[in-house]
View: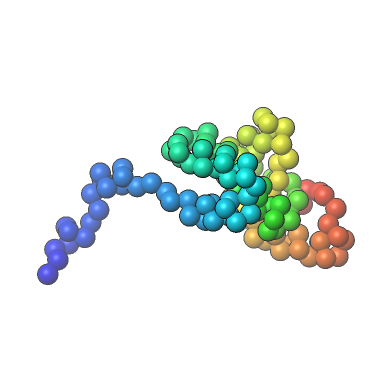
Length: 129
């Protein structure tokens, strides 16, 4: 019989946790260019660095947008993270498009609206706020 205390994780076990980035690895290897794959694995070597995480998220979101969702809407005030989003700030600093991304809680609804809009209007680029 296992005692209750044996089933609980100790705090130091949480310090050992490292995300696996399995979805990201799959996406970058399946859809990424050679340059994107090389950049991803370089960033992955120091995945605990917040700046690397921001660049990785931006990279994966761009790959998903280009090859999977084709969603070209811009991030808007409908996103609960809009004003504090590190991804949005990073894109602004680098003068990149601030596209809507899957980190937003409203992304699924926006994605559905985008599909309808795309089918009806062939999707001109616009914000959806």
